[in-house]
Length: 191
Image (cartoon, rainbow, N blue to C red; front, side, top):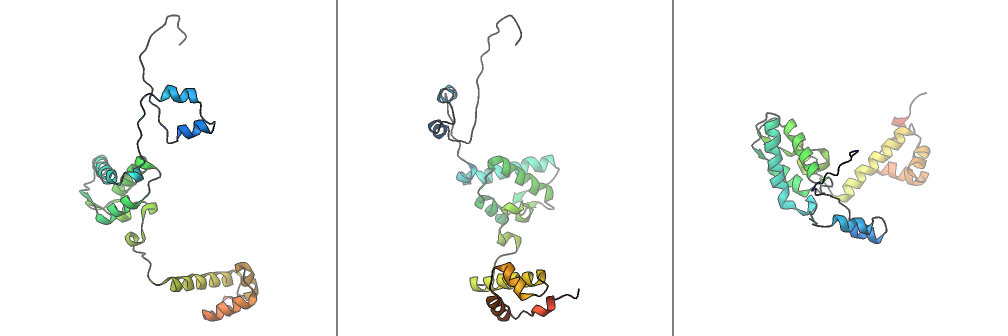
């Protein structure tokens, strides 16, 4: 650049994308001539979520790498943690997996990488000890009761105001409060 003499160079350009360039050409969002200049030796690598067998291999590699880097002695990944890793959809692909493993290695306090060291996005109810118990009807009743109480607290015990907040009629509000045995008077405050 800026010289007067031509210097020849033999280079190869490696380009990568997660987009479907053929579709983009049809839609007019990518130049066809540029596509054919780049498309000399295409390599299609499916996303990590489609390569479940690779997840454990990569995870073990990253455990070894970050155990050495952070002076930890992690020997294995627990079975629940493996299940969490293989069930996750990995939108961030290998980079996301690597970051998750590094985080878990940093948090680990023993020689096993447990599921509770993995990020919350990977946590399952079983792994976090919050597995659901009860029927759907029981769960809906609990949620309804909590919503009623929250609305009554916000409305300082005024059922009409709470009903409006929840999008209910005063009659339905009264019936639901009665059903759950909630005393609206306890939420009244003396101002």
